[in-house]
Image: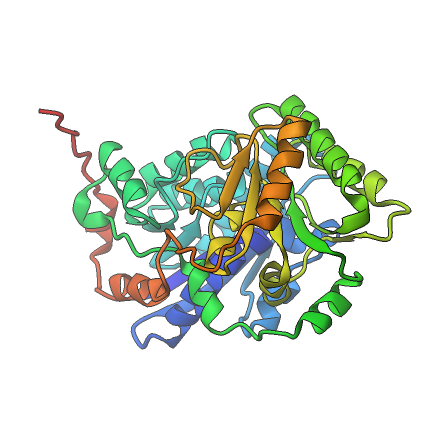
Length: 383
């Protein structure tokens, strides 16, 4: 069975890498790869190279980003994703499209597959993230998908309440945690050397993405975060990673670069790559910002998280995650609490590995294509 995996960012590739390996290694499955979105952007680190360095062939490259990031440009990016991926599907003739998560370009990938009558396997559906329009795209993808692979039981139950058949839902855990079993763990000194940062008393890795449902809130939160960093500057080493290509991203990127200018305790990396990023998280006192990596991977690596604002609101959070609103005093207080937190006994809420093998075991069952496309809506019974 030909499985075409669509990846559009460094973040989803980090979660898709092990499922891709498992597909490639399975005798009943054939892997095809389509790369799009920020993977093909120099401004975002041209992370398609990370895919090839991981040993995969990229069968289709679909450039879709525009030069702007306002609502009109983002809508145009979505239309380019539908058009470009439709052509890739027509050329590849896959039996299954594999997508992960909730981004608008992945919604485009699912829309194209639906129109072309290709079944969709969707990872990480059923989650809630109230601060981003990803919330709507995620649930939309779920309604187009034939097979569901949520990361926790609560997400699986949400899919059931959305009318998805129970026999199409497989709670496998988070595939990103599978990657932690084969990371090339580096000595602390080597990690900081690669980062280009002299370690301070405390060190944090920060990823702050747009809060797409309220861009004004995002800039207010970011200003508060940068002010809190300024207060702790003498004791704090800060690594910023790149911003998602969402509405308002350029404003956030500009403010981060302005803050970093002239500060020897701050470095910026558009993309660290999966291996270096995980090594960085492992060596940090805290992960700071509003990225899902602070919810998924950081607890598994026994690193504290300071989660800011509404972007990840709704996801189950381990006790190593401290959530604060965008107030500067709350952020400063939360930052001090996070770097002091003992996370040695923290347990992940998203499984302990083996998710990718469970995923391909389901794909390899040999489904009838028409049966997958004819998905019933199951009414949720409350009585």
